[in-house]
Amino acid sequence: MPELPKEAGRRITSIFDFFTERNNLEAIQPFFTASLTAPDSLQGKKEWERRRWQDERLFAVSGLERVNYRNRITGTNSDEEQSQTFNFRPNQTGVAQLSPGNYLVRNLDMYASRGAEIETFTVAEGTFRLRNEEDNGQIHLEQLTKPDTWQPVLSVSPADLADSLIRVKQPTNYVSVELPNLSLTASNSTMQLRVLFTHIRRNQRPKQKPTYYFEGDAILTFK
Image 1 (cartoon, rainbow, N blue to C red):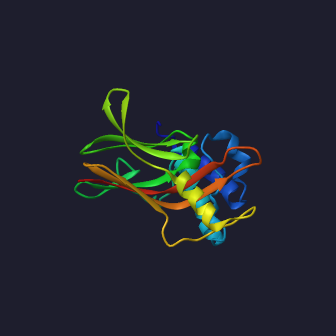
Image 2: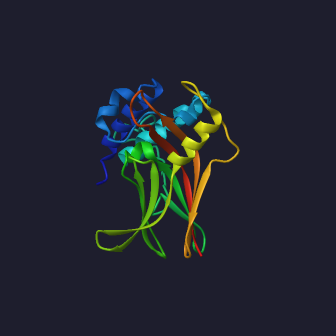
Image 3: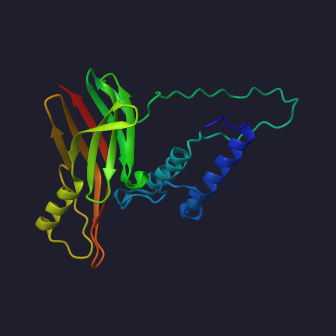
């Protein structure tokens, strides 16, 4: 995305803050394809935590950066020095190398992917993507083997995990359960994928198939 003029950045930041401070992101949801609805994992959290998520979410899905608009210097003859801000970030914000052959894939969000590609990333071992298959609630790790050709590598199923927990917990209309561990692991002879879920939700309407939603991080290890 081309860099916006400072004045446009100030106005957009001001608009984002306006809706965040009023807890009214649904008013601008039609302008975004990604969901602005806070995940269930934020229920019961403190107000400042929910507010921070909303603030970060708007800038994340828009691809824009926050621009300070509260302390502007007006007038062309002002002798005041304007502050300098330096912003640093990795060229791939979704993946971080923990050690050689060991990578953390951050912020897997089925809400944002809407039943498609979750994250594509390039590491020393190749180009990979994590893809959500909405129909059966599976997460697939695929490798780019040639242009526009993705080879399946590993899969895990948060849907199967949720279904197994349903059978154990026997919920009624709504149940929220905290567990000591919520993760899935798949491996082959060359690599291992472990998904650490922060949230899995299973929802089923009468006479319809269940739908599954999840958030979390993944660790990809090459053997």
